[in-house]
Image (tube, rainbow, N blue to C red):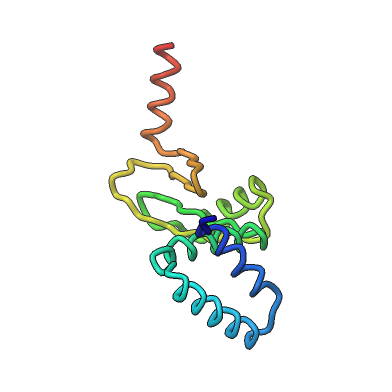
Amino acid sequence: MRTTAKQLAQVLYELTDNKSNADIQKSAADFACYVYRNRKLKLTGKIIDQFSAIYNKEKGIVEAEVVSRKKLGDIETKKIKHFLKEKYEAKEVILKNIVDPGIKGGIIIRVGDEIVDGSIRGQLDRLKKALVA
């Protein structure tokens, strides 16, 4: 049976969850040796991505990218974090603001595979579809 990156990430999470720093370091070192011995090094990028997703889900953390024309201010950042905490019932929200001068206005929020398009272009496209239908 083939071991997937997700399965390995789940094992790593279980080995390190609620452990002391010393235990985490030993478990991580042992895990790295296991990955090396079993020729799974090519999966390390996927294992890290899967581990991050598992960790965030278990700890109630939502990571989001917010694309905007200008850098978000503190007030906008707080409002977006509050919106995402409510929507995803998260304990913590980590925002990454990406500035894209190509956006005419508004914002685009990406959380995992989900996109909330509040850009001017997105709103105009939705209005156009509603008028044509």
